[in-house]
Length: 115
Image (tube, rainbow, N blue to C red; front, side, top):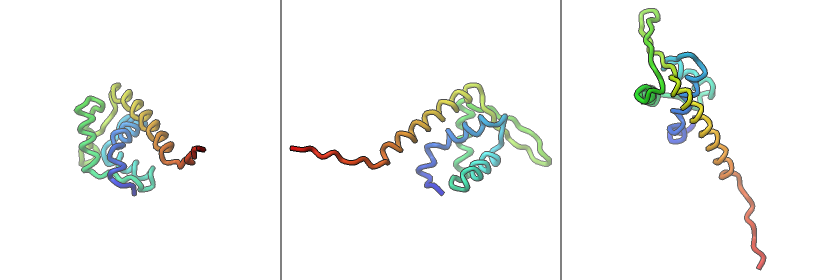
């Protein structure tokens, strides 16, 4: 499992990306998908997931829809058109950032000066 410090800055991008792949998803479904895809290296807790979903809703990047499933009501989240745009931008930004980190993490030989 990755540290919370590493994961925290990418959660918004992860959630936007996953919502962009589906018409709509509910919170537990999102956390389960992240856990499965990452082979449990990233586990979204309710305390991490729902504040981000609420912020995305406040920022009008997602809309919600309540549906009755059996005896319970589920709150589904779906991207707005602004959310779709933001998902693409955030994904591109993150991928570029990862490439930049790779450059920093690869050791480079130190050039020696001949005097």
